[in-house]
Length: 260
Image 1 (cartoon, rainbow, N blue to C red):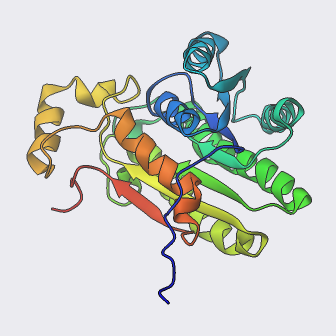
Image 2 (spheres, one colour; image 1 turned 45 degrees about the vertical axis):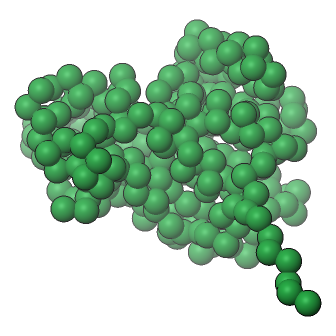
């Protein structure tokens, strides 16, 4: 008799996910993708206005969503975010670390310390604070889980004009690998996504600069910039049981920009 072949499951029914930076762009697309596959989502961002819009759209589509204002660079707010998610939905299974900031575009030598601190506070401290809070909850429950960190291709290469932002994304990639090793015995998988240039408000300084945009497109194999939904599919894979034997990996989703 032949052994039945199992089908990788992207089904998220019964799962609860926290998505940070969920008020627009990549975070919004990931949240909607997860709910379309059955997950309940907790949407986090600094301001409620955008979150409420996304939550309303998810509910109108038949999903379940909770919007919570949270500055992820403040660990006490992150702890409350996770506690509120558990209070509402009973548990958390998945964390999508997506909230990020990039207040300075220019040569590294010219950055002010305030901008440096803000970038590291949100992009590194925030990711770690959320990961630690969710991992503690999963370990206490004795439950497996998935953590997905949104990094960037600039974390792999020299990135003039985005140097400090790139440093934080390199730190996220390193953090992903170490936490995958440290949390693996608890059944917690930690992976990352490294998007290339994606058409969002966050990246508008690049996408609306014709010279930079043309330079990116010339180098990109698919000859287009990414869309938020391009990243959402990768997040679904890493968050779901379809990737149950994958951890410590950074999945590059850049249309072939790093191929050259």
